[in-house]
Length: 461
Image (cartoon, rainbow, N blue to C red; front, side, top):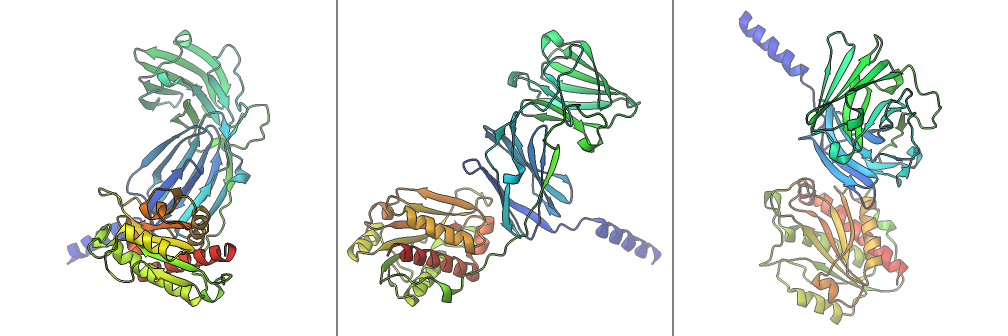
């Protein structure tokens, strides 16, 4: 009996010691065209955001959040890369790192989101003036003192394949091995006096195809962290730059770390139908639920069929519009097959004021991380696409805004009125398939699309 209680006690201790993972990061994406980072979690998260210098990077921590794996995305230009990882088992961290010589105005960083979906809009990166001071006594210009440590500039062809850091037993030396890297040949095997931040000397050695940097420290030197940054190697204190005792004498207007306030999340709200706009005059709208009958469209997770998603959404849109006095013609109102030619012919024959086709997206292979909503137009439908797309963004918690795009879909090219095609989400997406299978979410999407159509008809009667 005592053994049983002992085993149960040990198991209980292990169980309660395990971290309770409150949320998981489901999706993240950096849109280089819009200069924005978006991410989605499976439950509520309040991020913290910091701008850190040398190298300039925006650090977003998601407390109480886990990830399935670390990942990174090379961007190019002023934004070097975006990466995601876990500094500890209770925090997920996203880092947007700028290329050397660029900085962000922290006051222009815009953050907005719902409890589980956030977007961080970055301003255009600006060229910065050097934030380092040259060393005395002949130290090469590519070894730089920064505001929070040191930076070693390397050419792309000299970049290391791997970095190893070893600190001596007495704590007075740090050896940094750069596998496959080269320091400038004229400065190899030389020792230079530093006398900054607890570092007395620095020595460079070229050992075949590998480079070695040795820092000689005084007794009060902090512990140092070494990382491969775009343009070179950063050496900064593990505990943060605020512990440095001997900053450069020239004052700098840029703080080494700036906390950017995060606003309270907003709750997406379903619009009140009684407050929907009343169009000027009577209009005729053709609604086109995609696929149907022998063509079920895309088949997604759990057997979710596109036709079973778009028909109920379209029927509800039609009812909302009719309640506001709009004449609505549907290319199909049940599960039947209608050809693309018939759909376009129906819209042209009735001389509709606008044509709206409703579809659900899919992606080949097993890629559940691909989610999001997008709106298409061909020629005359751009303004309609803008207004409907914005109404969805305002009122529906979509996994990702994939934007407004031009496309040569048959029903868009062959209709004579402003025409759009709305992809309400991916039936193959982990987030979207769960949402699109939910009647309440489909109703929310229908009301948003109807709201957008009514707004358009009010502005363009």
